Length: 398
Image (cartoon, rainbow, N blue to C red; front, side, top):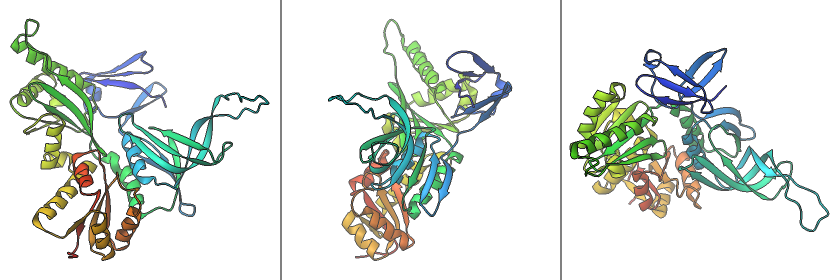
C-alpha cells in the first residue's frame, strides 16, 4: 500500500507521492468521486480508490476484556478519549530511551527505541487542533522501566489494545465509531461581505479549517474587483478542503447568494453540493445558528453533532415547559436512584468526575440511554453550564 497526497478540481484529480511525480486522471474517470478522504493502493500499475474508513476492531477477547483497535480517522481519537478512564490498561507501540548501564556518576542518555508498552491510564488528552491523543500513565508491562510514567502519543493509523471492564455504553460507542464512515462528511461556508469561514462537521463538533478576509477597497482593488478577488479566494480555499457530500452555505445579506451564483459558473460540480440557508450571523456563530435550527436535517441530522444538539435542545425545551427533567449531579443522582431517567446526557468534560460512572451504570441497569456529549460544540457547552450532567425523565420525581 502506497499513500498518496491528492488535489481535486472539476477537471482532474492529481495524485502525488512524496511531492514528486504526478498522476493525472481526467474528468470522466473521477466524475463520481467526491473530494473526501481517499486512500490509494498501487499494484502492477493499477490504481484503486477507496472511500473513508472508520475505526477498525482487530480483535476482541471477552474473557480478558481486551479490544484491539486501529485508528482510521481523527474522529476515532475523540471516541477513544471518551472511552478511556483512569485505571484502564492500554497497550501500544511507542518510543522510549533504552537503558544504558554505566559505572559513571552521571548516566549516559540512551537512544530512543521502539517498544511495546502497557500503561495503566492516569490521564487522557484529546488535541483536536493536531489530531493527536495523549494517554499518560504508569508502565505495568514492557521490556524496561516498570513503574515509571510514560505518555502514548497516538494518531491516525496507530494500533492500540484497551483492557478494561467494558460498560454497555462504551461498547455502543465502539460500534458507533465503526459505523461512522457510512455517514456523510459535511463542510460549512459561513460568510458575509467582510469574512468567510470554512469549517468541517466532525463527530466531536465543528472544526474550523480556514478563514478568508475580504480585501480592502482602494486603488489596487476597485469595488467590483475586490468582491471578485474575495470570491475567488474562497473558491481556491474550498478546492483544497475535504467537502464531502454537502457544502452548507450560511450567512446574512447578499454575499452568500452572490458566491453561490459565482460557484455555479466557475465550478458546477461543487455547486451541486450546495445547501443554502440565511442566518443572522456569519462565522462560527452562524454555523451554530444553522445547527440549532436543524437546517438541512437530511444533510447532517444523522451526524453525531446533530444528534447531540437535538437532545440538548429537547432538554432545554423540557426545562422551559416544565416537563420531567433533572440537571446537576445531585438532582440527576436522585432521578437515577428512582429509576426515572429515560435519557442521561453527560458532558465529556465531567465523565471522569467521581460518581458519574456510578450514575451511568445505574441508568443503564434501569434500561435508560446514556449519551456522552462533546464540549466542542455549542450544545455541549450549554450542557456544561447546567453542571455537565442532565436527564430527560420518564416521570417527574418532585
